[in-house]
Amino acid sequence: MKKNIEFIDIAKGLGIILVVCSHASYPLMSWASLFYIPVFFVISGYCTNRPIRIMEKLWKLIIPYILFTTIAFIVSQSFSISDILGALYARWSLFPYNNENNILFLQSGNCPLWFLPSMFTSFCVFKIIQESKFQYKTTVFFSLYLIISYALSFLPILLPWSWDTAFLFALFLFEGFLIRKYNILEKITTNHIILLIIIYAIFRYYTWSVNLSIRYYGRSLFLLFPGASVGSVILIILAKKVEGKKISHIFSKIGRNSLSIFCIHWPFITISERLLYYINLPKDTIIYDVIHLTTILLITYPIALIIERFLIKPIYRINPFKSS
Image (cartoon, rainbow, N blue to C red):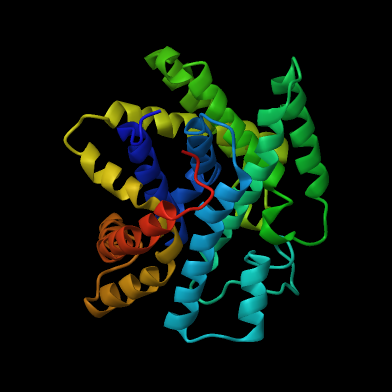
């Protein structure tokens, strides 16, 4: 597979914009809540065209996690025991959604960083699928991993490194792998797209909003999974439609730096809000939301570009476990 596929970069760009919008608390973003995290796993699965090497993934995901966590600690000047324990646990909180006595972690502007260990554990679980020789492994593993995910949803605490959601996220990786393997994107017509949008709207309506970082699956995991799968496919198809258009290079550039943007954007939401407060811009308007998002990206993108060039890419280049 080519090193860079434009529509994949565009999809990541669109995805990270949705993530930023969600964290900035845009009301309409609840309609994208099913898929704006799963789509990154689907994309990663789509780009997986060789055997997974666990140590290589460890280097590519956990070394950046340590790096971004260290940067967050230094910038926030927070080195408490709870901060360090939270970074080791790599979850936003100890207990699931709506626990009144919850213990919060990742409170130093680094709360989005749960995503990196989560991606790593998901690849660990997906490797089992990849190496399986079952004749009907698609049906077997989709069923088995959904059952395991459902069982783990009853745990009283969130497991470290998102092991309790790893089986669910591994299915999104598997979905992306199958989409590429069977050239599904090339077979989707305009009528299919309309049908997919209708299907997604139905699942979103009945699932409600979700928050996968704290294992909140809305009304049902079994509504979330198909809804998130369909929503992810719609976003990737949209990216493919945008490919080659004048505006596409904006999204692809953002997408190529999506990992760093994902990891560092949180504090800049507050900075943008303060800037807009000083110019007395009315809230709860489309104009405010657009300017707010643009400000966040204008601050975050150049910093992410520097981090990618001088930190992330060198880390990837010296990866001792990288396949030839």
